[in-house]
Image (cartoon, rainbow, N blue to C red; front, top):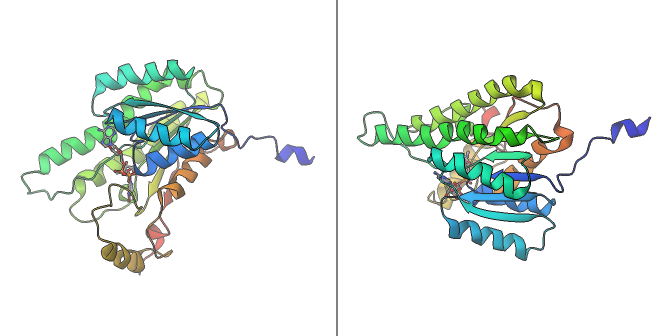
Amino acid sequence: MSDTYTRLSRSIAGHRALVTGAASGMGRATAHLFAAEGAKVALTDLDQGACEQVAAEIADAGHSGKALPRALDVTDGDAIARTVPQMAEELGGLDILVNNAGFSLPAQLDDDAYPDAWDASIAGMLTAHSRTIRAALPFLRQSEHPRIVNIASTEGLGASPSNSPYVAAKHGVIGLTRGLAVDLGREGITVNCICPGPIHTGITAGISDEHKEIFAKRRVPLRRYGHPEEVAHMTLSLVLPAANYITGTAIPVDGGLTIKNA
Ligand code: NAI
């Protein structure tokens, strides 16, 4: 029967989502896209004003969903334990958690700044994820379509020079994703991660256009940097009700970067 193949929903209208690092780049694009799809989005980042700015953009865009802006520093464990449940209550529950917040602190092992870069990278891009997931879990357990998406990186699959704290954190995100996919699978909670390649966002804003172009032409089969929305669409695909049977994956959205040998 043909309707056998159309019974899984491709809509997140009315679903309740929390996105970290949503004031810029991929987090912002994800918040916009979720709201455009009719979701209610808790939009969090370091700065309350910046969150409100994105929430205002979403309201101005006339999307059917809505945005709830709130400052949340993901390196602050107490703030996570307090704010994630608060926002879930305000949204009336939680179906989707997107761990997106991140930053780049390049350092070589013998740099004076290395120990701090290490601590900050692991705290902000790995420990933070485990904490937000722990705080969100009681609410995700009440959801019909519970979804966790962690934003890792192609630096979670390989490594660039002078970047080992970030590389270690992002490899850790893939490990955390796989471990929790196994543990939470029996409850129907899916846990996936996305490995973006080079994307035009705040993190890469300091790289000149010329260097971006040289890099992309040499390393990326699609020969360009990606756009935040192109990653957000993968995130959306992974949180659909129809994505029921996808868990524990690490999906590159990288223009082909990771498959190119020469
Ligand atoms: P972005 O700089 O545009 O956005 C990152 C957001 O995270 C910012 O709004 C920032 O304020 C927020 N943030 C930083 N520290 C935070 C903290 N302690 N608490 C809460 N929010 C915090 O950069 P982008 O690229 O959109 O970053 C999103 C994710 O994508 C990060 O996890 C990053 O590592 C990852 N990524 C980025 C790539 C790129 O080429 N842009 C490639 C691969 C992964």
